[in-house]
Image 1 (cartoon, rainbow, N blue to C red):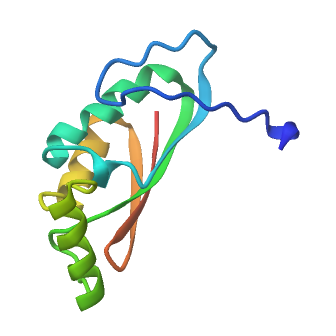
Image 2: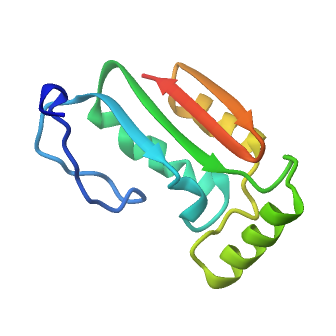
Length: 125
């Protein structure tokens, strides 16, 4: 791990991110978006807040669990219902179109790959 010099920061992704460090070549947002409150457009603020941290050509990558417009099996439907009810997931408004729209709003290029109801994504500054 030392070879890659990973750094971990804990911040509120929905607020501007003040980190006193040179820019990053990559930032990961894995399994975060479906836990944030609000619609995918509200969650898009996370992309806006990450932008200043990325070097030119830097890559944002991640994965999220979508609710709308994807196929779910009975177990994932129950799990999503339960997790949303308990409040540790808020993805009932999350869709592939919303994710795609927000990535394109903030990044020059992006890609999303669906695996069941999971969206794997990357975007380049």
